Length: 270
Image (cartoon, rainbow, N blue to C red; front, side):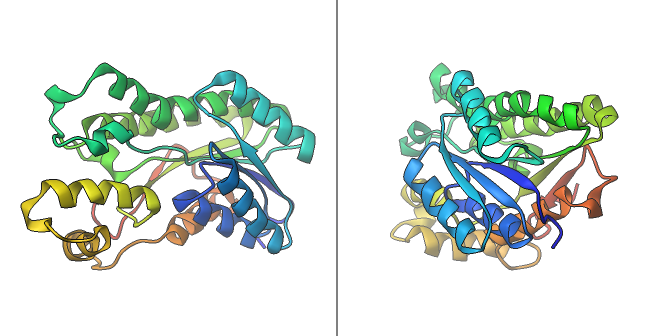
């Protein structure tokens, strides 16, 4: 197993992509701390890790609150004595944007920009700041930021989300540069469109706003309008992202840092 004896933190690990990432890490031998704002979801996924014979800890924390972030990291150190891997998976679009009947830039308010920043970038920054001192002390560590191909695709539809995913890409490169001397690898994965509970909420908006999608369920919209646009003509899965994370945090990728890997069926090829 590639990750035997390693301790990984996965933020936003209670559902969707995070759940798939946690599962893949545990299958490769890692113990996993599942950090999520929803305690019940975190506990359920932590139970899946234990069922695989690995140690796990469910931690509920709002990762946009620095005090809670620091306490979460202290709790993990107390429980496991170390951290080897950090996967910054938490992110998403704000609920008010999903509920509105317009995606126009002019209609977006300051609070929506602020919340999108906090969830998609600030949360990654804060927990990285809390974990990096342990990595520096032990002269090793792996960080993987989960961004999105949206960060490489300018557009007005969800401009705040696209903007801060793009910032996450640059954060990855900058962090990789300053941490390289400490033997710390920092990379980024850009998923394509993956059907998760979070995306289901996005699709509900599309089926409400787009005449061609009227009357469709979110899944029907996904199958008819999203999957056919993927060059490989198939959807990506949570496990596709999880396996990419496993690669980047393993010794197979020991000389890869500062990179962004698209896992999107060829949707974006740069």
